[in-house]
Figure: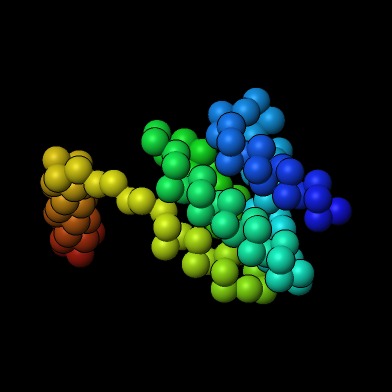
Length: 121
């Protein structure tokens, strides 16, 4: 019950790199949309903790994918689940952003060229 879930949440928070973290994370995310307000709050707070205390972002990525899958499967009934994304630190370096801009411009130029060729042919 609730005691086991709280224990799993505390275990996840105290040992982010625990070898069964994927299973625990999956259970926590599944309960983020629970009808029980206390369960929902506990799981959302645990996920927020993971987002804010994961230096490499690996576990945050895993949690984000699980949440996105839950949203896609329409199992979302509460906005608290989506609000956890507000605590997800997004790190974009200027050089990476510039590389994306250059790539996007090259792709758009190529598409225009292909469209012009197909219109001429």
